[in-house]
Image (tube, rainbow, N blue to C red; front, side, top):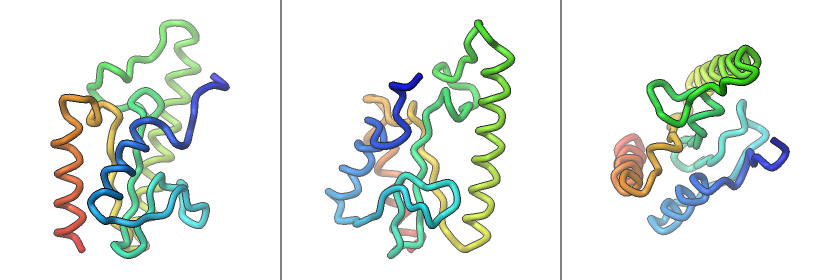
Length: 127
């Protein structure tokens, strides 16, 4: 488990490279904001979380299966993560931040282009 990264994951880097190519500038993992969003775009008052499907309990996702061994521990841990995520998003929205959550499975090779284009449009529309 010590080898699992919480920052600079492949899906996160993929999103950052896309945003940079589109001309967006951002900050990373701001400790000033609740939940330390992966990407913070102060100019657009927007934050982006890039969630791993397993760790954040993505509903109806094949990557979010709870392990068979030590099942109760993992179920509790993932449920706690989901509650914390929900609380953090609510706090950010309360302070007028636009919150975008991208899931690891949405950034798979066959879906990545569509997902990032939708994000790009939402960022521009909600500006």
